[in-house]
Each structure stands twice: as C-alpha cells, then as structure tokens.
Length: 473
Image (tube, rainbow, N blue to C red; front, side):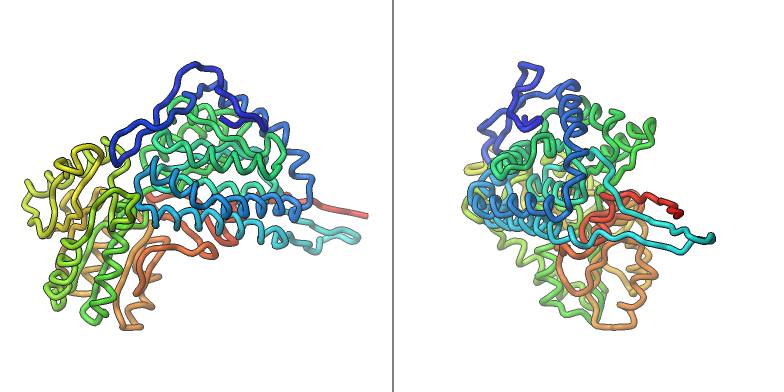
C-alpha cells in the first residue's frame, strides 16, 4: 500500500492474492488491509490537504500533468498489468491507458477554469462572493472492469480541485491503482496527497466511508455496493457520488443504417467481454428490419475469436469465477424460461479454456420484456433481443427498467431523435453511434444507475463545494 508518501505492508500480516482470469494463475499478492490502515491513509490525507489546497490550481495541475506524462511513458507496462489482473484484450487495455492519460490531462487543463461569482448586495458598500473550494479528503472506490481508467477519472479532478485523496481499487484488480501511486511518487506529488490502500470493501472500504475524516465519497461499482455506501455515509451526512450499473437498451428502428447498427451493437455489447456499465444490455429491433439485422449480427457474433487476451482476440475471459457463474446462471434461466439461443449459450471449459473464466459470445431471442434477462444487468457477453412494432413501443420497453444510465437509438428520422431527450429516462444517449463517452461530456446515471456524475466541466465541479462570503467595507 502507499500511505503518506511511503510504501507499507500495513497493520496485518495477511495477503490477498491476485489471479489472472485467463488461466487462474496467482501472479501477485497485496496486503490485506485493515480498518486501521484505512485510518492511517485518511489521517495522512488530512494532514496534507491544507498545504495542497494553498497551492495555485495551476501548480497542482502541473503535478497531474507530470503524472499523465509518466503514464504515457509506461503505457506498455501498465496495459499488461490491466490484462493480467482484469482480462481484457491487450489492445483494449492499451486503450484504457490512453483513457488514463486523457482523464488526467483534461483535469489538469481545468485548473484555470475554476470560477466563482461576485454579486451585488442589497446594502451599500457590500458585495456577495461565492467561491468554489475543495471538500478536503476525498475517498475514491473503483470497480474492477477498468481498474486504471476509473482511478484516474477520480484522481485527476479531485487533486486539481485541491482535495487530497485515498483510493481503494477492487480486491480483484488492486494492482493498477498501485501502479498509478508508484508514478505519483516518482513525479513528486507531495506525501499524503494521494494514498492507495488495498483490502476488501466490507473492511477497508467501510472504514473509509464511515470515517469522519472523509468529506466526499466517489464510487464506481454495483447497485448493491452503492446502496451500502450510501447507507454507511448517512450518519456523517457524507457527500456521495455513485456511478452504478446499467441495463442499456439498443433500439434499431425501421429507417436505420443496418450495417452501422450491427457494427455498433457488436462493439457496444462485446467490448471488454460485455463488462461495461454503458454496454448494450438488451436489444429492441423493429419488426420490418429484425430478420435482416439478426442475420448479419448473429453471423458476426459466431465469427468472434475468443482467446488469450495477450493475443488481441475479439474477446477475453470474464474477470473471475463468481462473475462467469452469474452469467451462466442468467443464460440457463433464460433458456429454461423459453429464450431461443441464436448463438453461443454456454461456458467454455475445454482445451485452451480448461482454466480461466470463459463464456461464449451469446445471442438470445426472447418474447417478453418482463423476462429476467431483459431486466437484470448481465455484465457479460450476452445479447438478449426482442422484436418491437413501433418507436413508441421501443421507448416504453426501454424505460421499463430500474436502471437509467445509457441508451442507444439507431434512426435517421430527426423527429424521433428530437423526442429522445423528453421520452427516454437515461442520463446518457447514444444516437447512431456505439458506446464510448467523451471526457468533455458528462457521464451520469439516473434512477438506480447512480447519483452525481463524472467527466467534463460538470464532473470537475462535483469535486468542489461552494462558500459564500458577505464582504462589507
């Protein structure tokens, strides 16, 4: 662990193993952190915060820019770490490290855009000043699907805004955040400004959230974990930002560009083995184009290469055994309930797949939107598909979900496009394009998909609070 500018094994002698999901080989271990370790990191961050906040924002940004440069230099090494601990294909891991650089760089560029307001008073010789100031100590809890990028997405804006930080990566993928800490140390970020701890969520994570030292919690993960964090922070009335799960509808209408829609559906479902919160999780195809679309889509799915992620296949393994067990359960339940298997449908366990956590790219045809596979987040390489009769029916089915993160619509009718912002209850809409948010946008989930948001000027502003000063002279 990295606490107060130094590497430490922590208070416990226990270790947590890190497994390669492609072959189940344990290739590393990290300290099994304790609540005391969490408190040590928080105390270090609290001590460092006043001096860090006193620096001009552009100076803080300089450190973050240096960190981005170090990440760029070590891109190949960092990408291999991502592959080894998380399992995505190497070229996709390289793309993740590019995202790390982008997140850090954008945050650094925001340093000169921290704004306030001066308002006229109702009284003579008085003004009202509203400033944006840091929260203090921020806790960042990251998910396993993008262990490097999700850490950087939080570290960059938190530090440039003047906060200090404690980061805990998911216990399945702890190494990427530690690598970022190594580079932060190398570029001279002052001790205590960035701390990285390891351990399980119910011990270390819970201690970080409940502590009176942490002023803000930013977390990416499951709805279950988000609810627990929300509840744990309630006693201290913590500011909480939650980026949680999704069940994105992918709607293809009768006037769509079918070739483009098929390509986007493949990318948006099977990238990172379907382990993206904004993934295409359920497909609604207009009856007039459904068979044409499915012929092309299923053909593409059957041609996908699943293999060792270091060889840049189309798809690698799931991250761990519980995750692939969950996907297998969802698919088997769907088949038992009447779903038709159009492609895949089974776990891979033979030959090159005798070890590791593998599942075939799968397409299921279902006939009801109430089916569990159309309502439950899969987070894996499974595309359930339904036929719809109209644009209105597609919108109704899409909104019939407890999730509200992202939605996809393929249509060339501008009138339909203009209705989407009023009639689709999702924080992120993709019209005639595949998944992949941009750093200048705003990544925000509605309903059970989260609170707050990340990226862009609105995400950066989330790491600052407002202070009002009445000045009389």
